[in-house]
Length: 127
Image 1 (cartoon, helix red, strand yellow):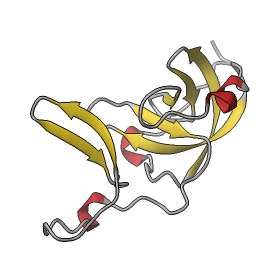
Image 2 (tube, rainbow, N blue to C red):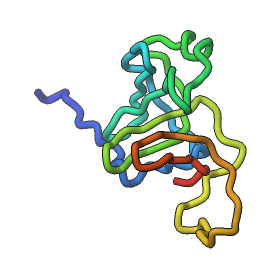
Image 3 (tube, helix red, strand yellow):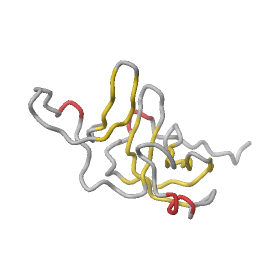
Image 4 (cartoon, helix red, strand yellow):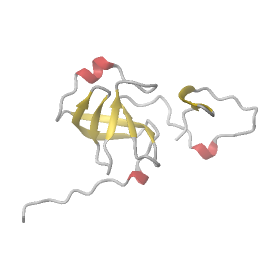
């Protein structure tokens, strides 16, 4: 049809997962475990209700399908394409992983993000 518009989506590789860069989006779906937002990326992002990155449920309960919202990418898995979003920016941008000094002496603060039979994973605020 002549009036159809092609909407180009931002490639996953170009998304800044620093928790600092704002993206404008729209709520497109609501589930028990999170709210899905189209923020112009080739994949939808999720505002999680559960897990280590859960957002205050009162804030999520205010959102409806079609609600315009400013979001911040807090976690992005380039392997799975899963994108976690936040409603507020982090106080400081995340550190790039290659700038983390892995010398066995430099301390980093973090939170447990996953347990597996072979070890525990921590989030230390890197992309």
